[in-house]
Length: 335
Image (cartoon, rainbow, N blue to C red; front, side, top):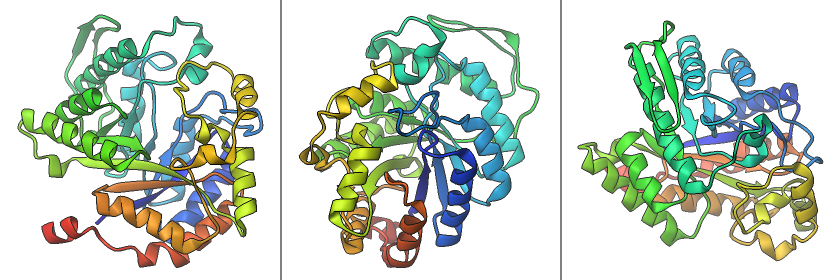
């Protein structure tokens, strides 16, 4: 059955408040949590950026939900060996409940250590080398690695779970999607036109098949942004105020400061949110929107309500959306 998850946005909320929202989400029927990993918020108004690994440790103790980072960049702030150690420890604490989401990062969070910020193709090569390091350490064997970007002296992980957490890679590009299918347990993407998503699925499945893996056993994951409120005007206002980044139709990976995003936010217009953030007070419209992605074949769908009204959003979805969702016909047939 498809898992509907709650997106816990560390850049928007105090971690104590966010933990309380996750507890409410579990009570409402959400089954898993995707935790964002930020050093800085997108805009100063968002106002937070707690440490995701500390939060996830508390989340595991406070709930019985599955959870993982969406996503960690194991290239700059974190060396891949540190990511492997952190993820392995979480899985030891909460067996079978964690997963590791990886991505190539944004300068907003990674430039803080003062390292050179490379172009996207280089960051993708770095990502897959980092993934090789993490996978090798997850094996429990002694690892020696000297690659194009990373070095690991002779070492191994001493605290290991019975089975490593699954690794998912975030991508919106077809070449990376195919490589993800070859090397990982699932793919994470964001809302996009249907034909683009189907193209990603095809390349992801092609990569999996090339390694002799059954694509149906791999996870297809998406995070969706919505703005739910009592009226359309309120839903639009909170999207403009709290999540203008969702309307920015250009690559955000090279922008370094929240103040720069704030300046660009002044250029955002309501129509820029079209097909990127669902802005609606109509709960049936939210139901149809979510059902569409279930029917497309996603296994896990994470929902981020961009407003501060998290309790109202969680209650509305828990009582009027989640119970009415239907399994995709293909998934039901497979079952």
